[in-house]
Image 1 (cartoon, rainbow, N blue to C red):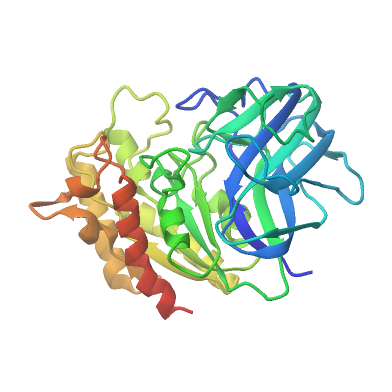
Image 2: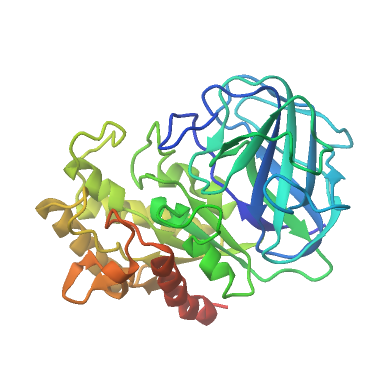
Amino acid sequence: MNWTAAWTASPQLPSAGFTPNWSQEGFSGHTLRQIVRVTAAGDRVRVRLSNAYGTSPLHIAGATIALTDTGAALRPGSLRHLTFKGARSLVVPARGQAESDAAKLAVERLDRVTVTLHLAGTTGPATFHAQGFTDSHRAEGDHLDDVTGTPFTGTTASWYYLSGVDVSGADPAPGGVVLFGDSLTDGFGSTPNADRRWSDALAERVDRPVLNAGIGGNLLLNDSAWYGERASARFHRDALDLPGVTTVVLLQGLNDIGYSEARDQPTYKPAPVHSAAGLIAGYRRLIRAARARGVRIVGATILPFKGTTHWGPRAAGVAAEVNDWMRESGEFDAVVDLHRLMGDPSDPDRLNPAYAYEDGLHPDDAGYRVMAEAVLPVLQAGQ
């Protein structure tokens, strides 16, 4: 059976996060219900689960998948119990991952699906994806078969253990596109529970799977306790190893440049001072890894960030040098010049207010749509 990645989220270490979440406390006797939007169609589905940062085995008493109705409610008649090598329960080893057997469930592109896990025991701290910008729901006890959603009274905006949903169908899906990066890819500044990240905007404009491998705060060159492993350490797992991927769009480096400019930000650690040469060496590692897999890699220039916590004379100079290298070197298979596209016409190093979230660092919904439109011609040229 040929599988295509239809949705993904990059796993992270348990941490406090920007908003309240359950990663550090974990789960004990809970049922966890999580909603995602798939970007490929099929008549079979499977889920991928990650215990990448668990220090003990993860015991899952049962799991289901269904089409989403509203909130934690399921579309009647769509609930399917998942199995793992024929069994309804499974144990995922510490630092391990698992995938379910195929389940018969027809899904269309941009359908929302709900994955429910019953965690009968005590899990300890949970591998998760901090900034889901989509509510996940929790209930006390076993509510795998509940379709109403009524028992699910707890919510957070993170995903737990769920790292992917794959589909299979009669016709092979076109090559998948991974957007890889930091909070600009993760969707910070977009409207929660509305699927308005730039990956969502792109998925609505192309007939290809679009996969979001962003982690808010992520760094190209260094690991972070809050913001995930560095890009080169997670690039294979979160991008190249996903089934059906043929293109990666890389938008990363702003945090490496800007964290050392920020003051009184304890989560922005480590914050070494990086040169343009150091970042370029990091990009080249990812380019080599993609080429070794036969995957096309597109570079996106660093967005304007003047007037933000990341801005300073040194950061401005490094960003300009990196962007010039991207435009002129020819080392990426293609380049999308988001810096020029998203700049304020009267001050090109500042994000255009028409596209900017309130912090001036991230785009808003309109800005993410503009970014998606910009990458379309590059993707079409590479098909």
